[in-house]
Length: 174
Image 1 (cartoon, helix red, strand yellow):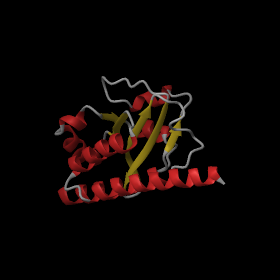
Image 2 (cartoon, rainbow, N blue to C red; image 1 turned 135 degrees about the vertical axis):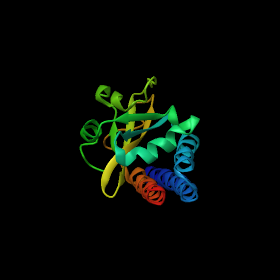
Image 3 (cartoon, rainbow, N blue to C red; image 1 turned 90 degrees about the vertical axis):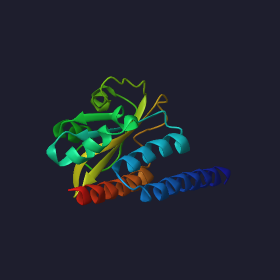
Image 4 (cartoon, rainbow, N blue to C red; image 1 turned 60 degrees about the vertical axis):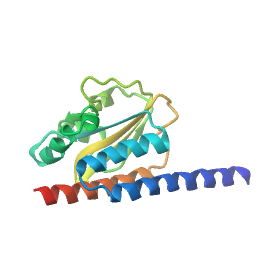
């Protein structure tokens, strides 16, 4: 009985932290504010040591990439990638991918001049109009942090909110 209560308590804590992050993301006033808030909140609330973004390098993403490049905090955590490469890594699905083995193919997601020492990763696809445009990436030195058998519900819900906000900001700027 104690183990069930522990799991319930842990899940409730995770839900509270994600809810707090979602509240702050809803208040973001632009792309830079949105993505900087996400970085700060994930690092602070979950103690994730490596958080960065990969965006597909194409004309549709140009407004997002320009905004990111205007932020000193974000531009060093940005990786540009081809659509083919990203879709291959996330299996063409808008669902988070958790990995802790055979990480080498995922090094393509690292920002230029950044080599994170990670043993597990969460690759969280972002979409606009049901099309993958990039990913929010989390890495950890612990192989146990992200394992393929873990539930990704909260990551997916957060990605949906980020994607919705990115769509709002790009629609209003375009």
